[in-house]
Image (cartoon, rainbow, N blue to C red):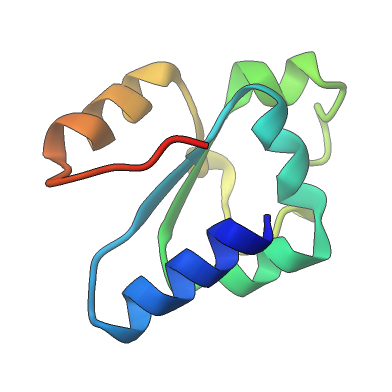
Length: 90
């Protein structure tokens, strides 16, 4: 999570637009205290199926910087990739 936060902060400081999509076990990072540092610096989205699969259903309100529409499908991930000039996968 530290790498994601630091890369996001650096890109945001340079005026870059950042989209982050959390899927698989990555959805567990949404409850990390460090996740709060991403709010306002990137457009955030979470795979709803992964979120539920990892036992987090009902905890959407515990994730800072997101609303219900930010819990989405892999189609949003594909859309983000098609719009991106470049991307990183962790």
